[in-house]
Length: 430
Image (cartoon, rainbow, N blue to C red):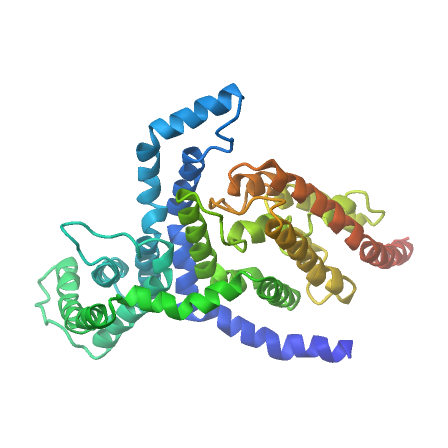
C-alpha cells in the first residue's frame, strides 16, 4: 500500500500540483499579494502603536505614558494605517494586474492603472465629494482579484485581435501604449459601471458587496478547525511529493488570510471581540514552527545526533530555521519521499494547529491584529501579531517542546538507519 501511495504521489499528484503552481493566474495572484505586502506590514505595525498592550487601569508608568500618547495622537497614528491596510485592495488589484499583464507581454504599469481605475469605479462611488473606503480594505480583496484578472484579460483580448488605435511608428512607445488603454477603458465604463449602477439602484448594494455576500460562507468556513487541518494536510503532502506546498496553499489562502485580518482590525478599532483565528501569522508562528513540517524542534535534536549527516544538517539549518526558512533541512534530510519521516512531517503541524486553535478559541492566547513578516522568529512574531501578548510567545515554546517529543521516535529510527549506512561506508573506505 505504501508503494502504491508513493507512486500515486510521484506519478499523479506531483505533475498536477506542478501545473497548478505554474498557472499564470495563480502566480499573478501570489506575486500580487507579495508586491503589496510591504505596505500592509508597515500599516499593521502602526496599528500596535494605536492600541497599546496595556489595560487602561494599569499602574505601570510606561504603559500609562503609551496609553496617553496613543489617545492624544490617535488620528495621526492611524492615518498611515488607513493609507496602507485601510486601502490594501487597491495595492493588491494593481499588483495582480501588473504581474498578469507581464506574463502576456503587455505594459504592466498601464494595465495596473486601468485595473485600479476599474476597481475604484465600482468599489468607491463618490458620495458628497468623498470616496468611501468601506470596500477598499479587506472586504474588497475578492473584488480586487476578479477585477484585476478581468481587466487584464480584456486588454489581452483586444491586443490579440489587434483592436486599438493605429498610431504612426514615429509616435513614441509610451504614448502609443497610453492610447491603447482608451478602448478598454471605454468598454469598462460602458459595461461594468452601468451594471454596478443597476445593482446599486435595484438592490441598494454595489458589486463588491454582492461579491462579499457570495464569498462570505467560504470566509466563515476557512476559519474553522477542519478547514485549517485540511489546508495543513494538503500543503505538507505536496511538500512530501517535492512540490512547494506552502506556496500553493498560501496563494489560495492569502485572500482569506487578509480578509480575516481586516475584519479583526475593524473589530479592534470598534472595541469589539476579534472574530477570526486563521490568519497568516497563525500559520507561520504556531502551525509551522521553523518552517513547513514544524521542524525547528527537529533541528535542535539534529545538533546532538550521533549521525554525522544529521549533525551537519542541524548546524546548517539552525540559523535559517530561527527565521522560518527550512529548505536546508527539508532537502538535506531529505523529507521528500522519505517514508520514515512522512507521518511526523504531515501530522505534527496538524497537532500544532489543533492546540493553537483551541487556545485561541478559549482566549488563552491573543488573536492576530497585525501583519508580521513570516521571517520573524516565532516567539517574537506570535507576540507581535497579537499586539505583544506574552501568552502567544509562551505557547510557541510549549509547541516546540511537544514537537520534539513527537519527532523523537522517528528521528531515532532514521538516525539508526543513517548510522548503519555511515558505518558501512566507513568500513568500505577503510
